Length: 176
Image 1 (cartoon, helix red, strand yellow):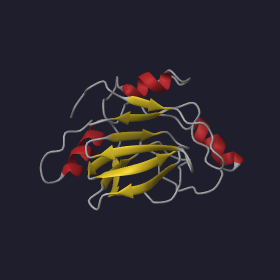
Image 2 (cartoon, one colour; image 1 turned 90 degrees about the vertical axis):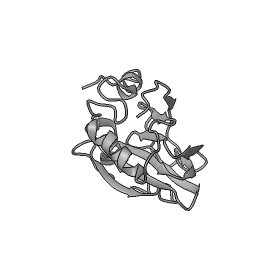
Image 3 (cartoon, one colour; image 1 turned 120 degrees about the horizontal axis):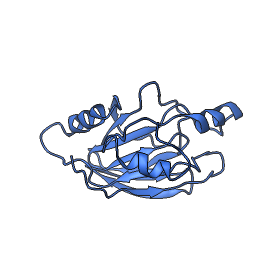
Image 4 (cartoon, one colour; image 1 turned 90 degrees about the horizontal axis):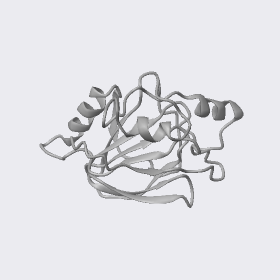
């Protein structure tokens, strides 16, 4: 694991039907995990698990705009590359490649615009949270769930004193 402090942030406001999360920024960890061996996804799984984010799946990113109301989501790019859109239709385009990690707060729209044939992602969530797939504007109850969803004690890449605590605390949250 590369423990470089280089983490980029992207704060996204509501975009039409996509709520995004105007309090908590997306965290982008370029080249966070060194890709070695014949099962790079296992490297992300071990990293996330070590920091309290149980890995849930290996796949890609859906090619339609969606968001989650019941879970903050970490995406580890284990192989290939892709062009993703964050924030909903006409949102922010982002190129990702093997080794990168994205931490998406609940409510952040995301969509795969184009990907290499070998594109592989590992997804994980904090304990007790999950990826409910939402493709329409949130109900008032879903919006309250997004706003009240706690964030975990540890950053999925950097641990107890990582970028999650630093950058999310700066935007009105206190580390728990």
